[in-house]
Image (cartoon, rainbow, N blue to C red):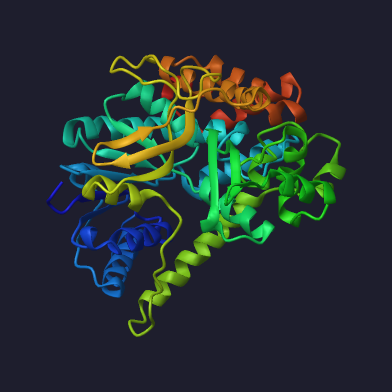
Length: 451
């Protein structure tokens, strides 16, 4: 690719995240002249992101072509890369609904964007929008690489593989590299000197190897876990290290609602013991909304410098490697087995003791040929078994969307580890019906609550 790459940012109204990605992209000389298309359905937020893009370009000395549009087709037309960061339904009403309705039934959550009843509902309202966009891509930019940052990551990647397999999609998260930095800090080591191998499913991948200059660091991590002197906000993950022998990538607040052990009906002592921050995601949303307002005000003061620092996100590294051919290894979310255009799994699994048809997070080589996932083979059976409890929920949610079978939504909720730890079957059925009704037209018509 010798010409300036065409990069579409879908959901560019996520201004703070867009700022980080644009800073990463435009800091590369080879990408400094990129054709940046900013798309969002909110003109006000889109205008603020356009101002951010201009300030970022000025700060890093780049000269991109930046355009804004509320027409998705225009943004996608001829794009080489599509970066997706939408939130269907927004904080209000969708996220608020995902928290407030379950509370009425006694179901407490922390993040609710990946699994659990909140993750199921988020998948139901998000995957159809991603699939519609992907079908536009098939027509307007069929060779583009789709970089998906939207949760629920595994469900989204899986759903797109079933509904639009022609488009190359890789799901991107920062939990692998972010947690590596946290563990290095806990051990007093520079993260750039850490060598690791990680594999699993998004938000439930584990470090199969974690070393410093050839030394296995797991004995030191285990010693820290046994000492009881772990960071206050990380007690859940260190407890799981003690039980499983491996450290998980996603944060303790996330992980606490992927398993049935830490948020249980009648066990507030567990909440206190492990420092589980209930209702954490709504607090973050409010903070992010405040951050957007602060950024908007700052942009109205041209003399105030806009700080641009490189983030840990993989998006810009992937684009740079595809454009220049410089090889890199990133962690990406892809299907465990190749998927053909008919939407069915092919042969040759990346993780051999996980199902053919599921989305996995593995190291991927990136160069001019695009994303090339690494075959891991078998992972420890206790890890595969724990992942399967989450894969069950993902599979049934995707199946509901693909087949239009509403019953599978109830089955997904029934099999969810956290939901079933707090509610009985009658409560799960009633809650699911209530949420489907509350979300209304955000849910595909054939899956909406029956009259």
